[in-house]
Length: 217
Image (tube, rainbow, N blue to C red; front, side, top):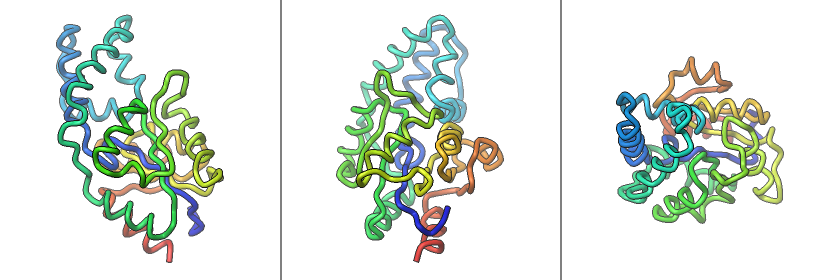
């Protein structure tokens, strides 16, 4: 990434916010209802970071019905107690001050992502939100990243933006799209994220902000 950063794409769960409690609750209940072994919270986070297909594949021939059941349970509590992750507000404020546009690119359903951002008072801070919609490819497919760039500031070149996320799918999508990917090591190791295509890895968004401040004057 050069110092000519034109935009930043941000994953949502595990990157900007801690929205894993309703995901973990829904997955745990769905697994139990389908008679599958329980999974640790970290294992569920890692499946989330690999993309929707990773979680759905656990249910084999029942994946369509299980996915519907997961969503129904998830939606009971997904707007409860949403917490910004460390460094999120500071990073967003700095990017806004620098005039660098931001977009959220998430595999969460479009209206759910927008509702969570609205509850935090963040929705207006983003040029666009690209979430899961019927017929729209999800990460690790690069399509959501390209859609975000097309919607930002009259269209940005994908090579001039940075993708920040905590999952392998985020880094794979960035690599396939042609932009730099910076990974957060909350669910995957730096080695795993680098293998997925990450150009740099950080323990938190606080570290990401410090790095950007050094690179962009």
